[in-house]
Image 1: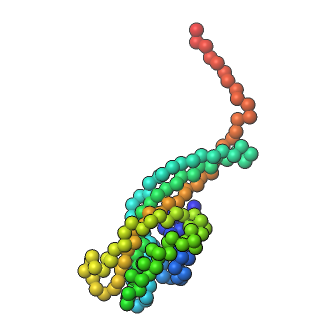
Image 2: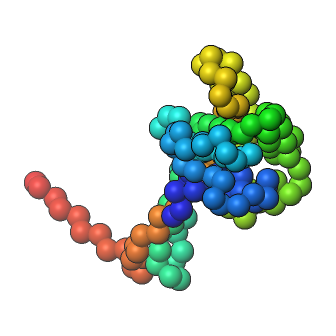
Length: 162
């Protein structure tokens, strides 16, 4: 299973058509004020299990357990000369396109509506670079396959203690 942060990073990379060198995990503060773009992806809280399904394949004698998880992620856009704001808003509008839905299927995630866009430069009172943060809910599956023997014939033994 691929880490959900990696799945979100791949989705952002492909949706915005940027190089992997522009996307980092977590809050590294890796922005050096020399580039027009840096994107960081981080998860905010533990994921919540939404549902679990179990499917048994009698031919292969495997039990497949799927858990759908929902987690909250932040996507931070750093930049200068208005690039952070521009890229944050481009991402927020492209999220609803057909290309985005295709990428979500490709990467095995569901990107739900963006719950907040914040100008963190303004909140933190720092003026040396721009930073916009998007908060988004992301759904993903965790799948586990377990070898489980099937019953060919049920055998019962009744014990009577009289």
